[in-house]
Image (tube, rainbow, N blue to C red; front, side, top):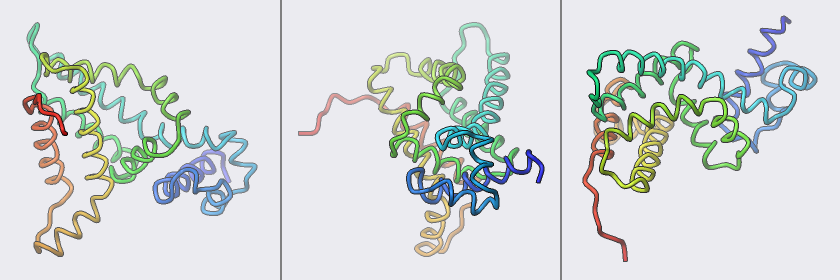
Length: 218
């Protein structure tokens, strides 16, 4: 078995199992069983389970960041000096970059969003540190543009809205098949992924652009 094929088998098995079961619940032996390789192969190519988790994310995020950077370059070249794009355009760039990049590696957004949700809900500080170090410049560039669409928004409110956007995206895409099945059962209707993404961008734009409130919950 060629080294490249071995790495691909391990990554594929780890991606599927981590997304389905979580990081802590998935052992290296379970991964090697699905990949049909021995434990020494995982140790040789990845070293540790933490490094394997990071590699799983890199296979998604490296093409995603390249595509996002490309689209941001195109956007910037189309703007007049001092012009700020609308939030909808930026959110569309983000979603389109996601769908294009996962397609390029023969994946679907659903699996990546499940993994991303696990990175936040399970104790994976090493992963968040790694992602910040490796992909932080692209993140900061994008968020910088998004902040410019909301010049009067309090930074804490902006922070929370970013998390609401992330949460809505993770739930919608990570649970897409289940949501689609409920729609089919309750309303006898079908919505494909492409149309659902249009609805998602509309909703996220409204969330980001919504007026602030001074109300507090008692």
